[in-house]
Amino acid sequence: MNVPMLDLTEQYDALKSEIHNKLEEVMTSSQFILGPNVKILEQSLAAYSNAEDGIGVASGSDALHLSLLAAGVEEGDEVILPAFTFFATAGAVARIGAVPKFVDIEPEGYNIDPDEIEEVISVRTKAIIPVHLYGQTADMDSILKTASKYNIAVIEDAAQAIGAEYKGKKSGEFGDTCCFSFFPTKNLGAYGDAGMVVTNNDDLAEKIKVLRVHGSKPKYHHHVLGYNSRLDEIQAAVLNVKNKYLETWNDKRQEKAAIYDELLKEYNILEVIPPKVFGDRRHVFHQYTIRAEQRDDLQTYLKEQGVSSMIYYPIPLHLQPVFSDLGYEEGDLPVTEQACKEVLSLPMFPELTEEQQRYVIHQISNFYKNN
Ligand SMILES: *Cc1c(COP(=O)(O)O)cnc(C)c1O
Image: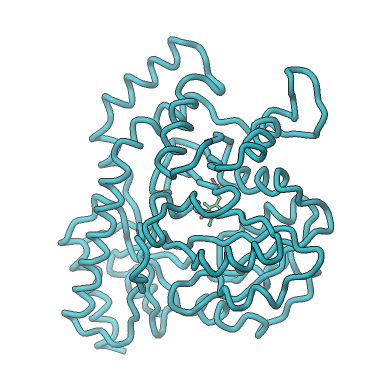
């Protein structure tokens, strides 16, 4: 049997006629950039996140970049973030010339350790970026408490966590801004690059709206240096169709995760630690990530058996060559470094079948029987 990490074809087949109709509408209208579809998506995702405003941008990376600029982060300022995340989180900081201050994660949830944030705060700290990794939010109460104590902006990286909840509130309700990615593999995926910022802060919303169109306001008058970072109508049309199913898909991901949990128990695989879901959170399982002994050998074995798996992420950001001038060394963030050696994400998507899941766990069990 072959079990892919992710298979988008079934979803496409189910939505084909709906999507094709919408795409035809866009092409017939000949309005391709920041039109009615973008507006609808912005309004519905803002409402979904209990935020006032949504601002469609070109990607999740740009959502972070423009959020930082709007929050007033400048060259030489410091921004606190976890080292255990996708590169884009730190890339957005470094692109401005600001300095990423990497913080360790807590071992069970894989998110920034709130107890370590205060230690790296300095007079130059302008923002904290909590990343809701794998689809579960960071410990927002502690983070917001520290941020307000020092008057630091909070920018949520919710690229993997649209629909995630913390104490009954949605990701998007906590930070000054919250950033979503619609990269095709995310829980709500476009057919290309796309992203959005949601916010309850009018001033930040206005700034980001100007920054995404070359800093132009009114048109052809430029008071700030902006970018070309717009969301196009084709992507927004696709996303508006898919958005109707987001809740169902997130529920399905949770069901698949529960099935994996049960299968791991049934096979009694002691070498594997399943993901921890905190009682006060809704985990939307962008990834189902285990910690595994002999992780690399396990991954090779699974591949031979037709089971795909991925390592998110093999190298922590503080040890990436591009950041070598920041002076971090191996051992600086031990919990992060350990996670990089042990995590393995298993196939996860709403259409995954129970038969496929059983096969995955059966093969993991076989590996440990023979090793
Ligand atoms: C995907 C992702 C991003 C970047 O989003 P893009 O739309 O690909 O630019 C940022 N942060 C995290 C944690 C992500 O997973």
